[in-house]
Length: 115
Ligand SMILES: [Zn+2]
Image (cartoon, rainbow, N blue to C red; front, side):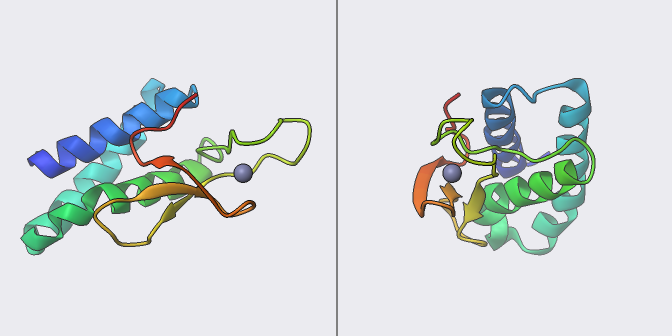
C-alpha cells in the first residue's frame, strides 16, 4: 500500500476512534475503501494529495449503508438538536476538513477529530 493510502487510513481510523466507532467491522470497511482507491491512485499519481479527502468521503458513504452515520457532530448538546453528521469540505482538496453544515463551522481537519 502506498504512503498516501496508509496516511489516509491513519487519519480515518483516528476519527472513527474519536466517535467510538473503531471496531473490527469498521476497520474492515476502511480497508475495503483503501483497496478500491489504490487503483485510482495508480492511475493518477498526482491525485495522492487528495486521497485522504476521498477516502474519508468513501468511508462515510460505506458506513451509512452498514453501520450508520459517522462522524456525528459534537458541537451541540445532544438533547438540543437531532444528531447530524459532519461533511468533508472541500469535495476534492489537499486539506480536507470536517464541517458542520448546520452551523457553518469547521470542526476539525480530517484525522484530528476530538471526542
Ligand atoms: Zn453540528
